[in-house]
Length: 545
Image 1 (cartoon, one colour):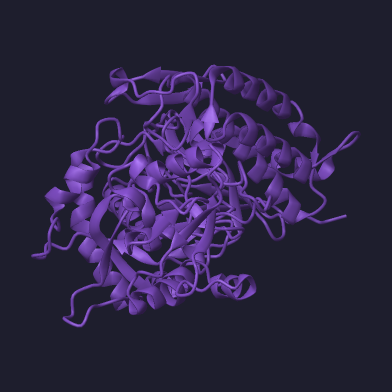
Image 2: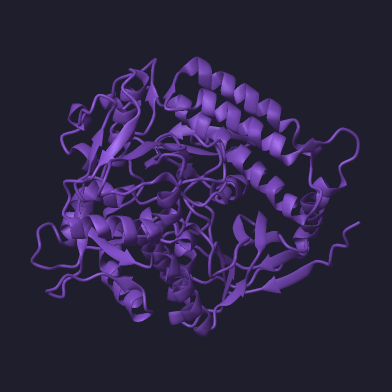
């Protein structure tokens, strides 16, 4: 029998949930302002989040004489109706970019330069040449962590948050447990930044069938949305913020953006460079178009697919294979050796990876959500977007700290949650392994919420997910590690349910990675409209704004 330690209670001025790139940006801004800061994550600061696996680029406009290199250019690309972000936020992102570039280089991150001293930047995902290339990207997180610890940020590693606390309509703190020994934590804070990552992974898989062999961190299972939803925050764009990428065949990793941006040609089984049929920018189009195009080729019988790179200059080709790709996932060269991959000798086989479900917390220009005192650190995507939006949220939250909130009136809720955390370790009667429970979620999402969907299928998905939910109290954890996986699966189930419900409301195709077979065309009436979902009377409610 495992002996669980007593409950530990903590208090801080600013509580940052998530220590990935967004959480680090928030902590950096807060500590620069002298705010007492506690960072919490189920991983370790030095390796947590998607950035913990490495990254090969940092997006930045720098105001040089190069084309499209101003904040106004950034606004032109990102200020889209219905995006959920404002022009003010995009402008602030552009203003913070050079500050974060200087911070990263100052801490020893190897941003690459051209012989004339300017940064080596490439184009990507339909955007101009803003992508600063990075070498040894797998070291970034350790360098940032060293700085944050030196700045005096308090860090609680290996603690998963399972519930946010609210009192009189205002954020009041959070409850969680240590994923190594089961210690439960009750943290009082009147200002909280949610920075647990925009992505929700492990909902579908790639061809390996391994849910942990993912493009981004497999430990992001929708906590950002499940926790916010449970406390009554508005969540937006779960119907359109769903994404996927091409991956090396059988090897889940990022990095294909660098390959596309360097001029690679995607070929189908007939040897055709086919992307011109789907977007004028071809392989360098926004990611959803390459995925949609590749999937259409696949279902029409023109797979498999390869990236042809032998026409690329030898020095750039070497850079792609031996610098950029290993910077995203350190084992890439092991993969190349085992499969005989050599960019200079033959095309590399690629495939469509898993679908990553996502969304965004509804956020005002101060980065505060619809729950007072709760801020959103994950406004923009990519390493740059996460670090910068976290920094902006931390800066804003630090200027608006509220007085400490007494949690005495919430003691019954706290005790109930502390008991619920450990409940999977005390299941009696019929029990269900976590792996079986989570695999059922994945099976439903892969079949009914794949790259092509329809109303009938999504309604079945909601019924099946609801049935899976009735089994929650039977899911068993035999140790503390499995306890973490059980709670991850609960967040995954909640996030997948919301994504399915929201997608059902959008009766069109063309604004995301998926296609609706019953509504195959884009509908202009949706232009600028945002779908909101929140919790009302213990049920999800959706509405358009």
